[in-house]
Length: 26
Image 1 (cartoon, rainbow, N blue to C red):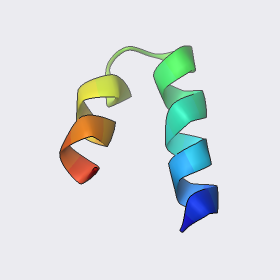
Image 2 (cartoon, rainbow, N blue to C red; image 1 turned 135 degrees about the vertical axis):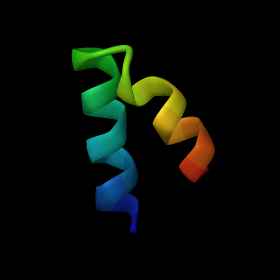
Image 3 (tube, rainbow, N blue to C red; image 1 turned 60 degrees about the vertical axis):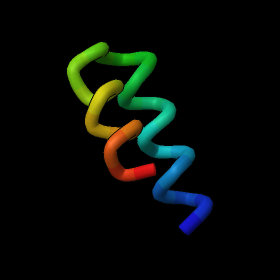
């Protein structure tokens, strides 16, 4: 699970699009 969260962080830095997605998942 931690790995997935870390991946989300990377995507967030890469693109602001997944940023809100990560928040929703959290």
